[in-house]
Length: 145
Image (cartoon, rainbow, N blue to C red; front, side):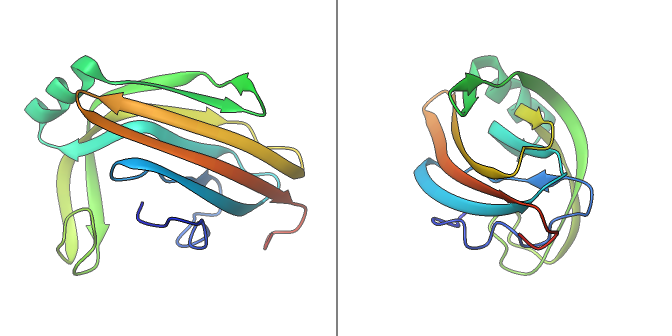
């Protein structure tokens, strides 16, 4: 989420899906190389907090995404109980180990993209919080694109 260029977009990716990150606020431009054949998942706006904070956050949450000029269909995720595992000093929890919290937000799931260059625009907000990412996605044909 603190990556301003996309140079770290391949870190810690699972084998079955490709996650794209939002920001902690503000808008950035990233270029990301991803392998062909993987669904792509990303938040328009999201939060990890308490159950009550998620309810308040989702009351005003909104967002949109376009892939190559076409609108993507978002899904609202409310009050999902999640385990977050991080290293000491990580930007989400700040602590090493696993903590349980609530997660909420508006997310998009895309089917695997065709090889080549794609433009993805993400915008989201809740209350006074605003986030956005302008992605250039380069989808390769090998697993290490």
